[in-house]
Amino acid sequence: MAKTINEKITETESEIVKLQNQKKRLIQQYKEQERKDRTRRLIESGAIAESLIDDAKALTNEQFKSILETALNAEG
Image (spheres, rainbow, N blue to C red):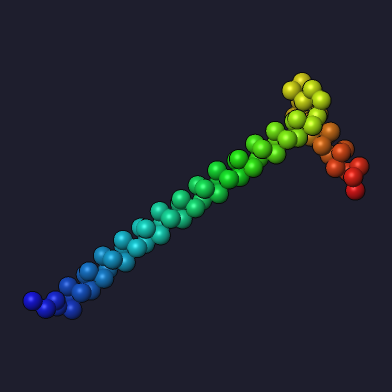
């Protein structure tokens, strides 16, 4: 039995909705992966910096920042 134009329109609209939802899920997955990658990068960078600074655990965040700023400015 041949489908009517209205049935084809309904099926097409349904497919559009499915594809839009799939797009939303993919965008959400992409953003989540980007956040995970950034978090990993920040943790690794912080670990490297901490390993190069003597007694970094005893420093406050401001002291740690000051040491990094001084080191970076000294190179330039």
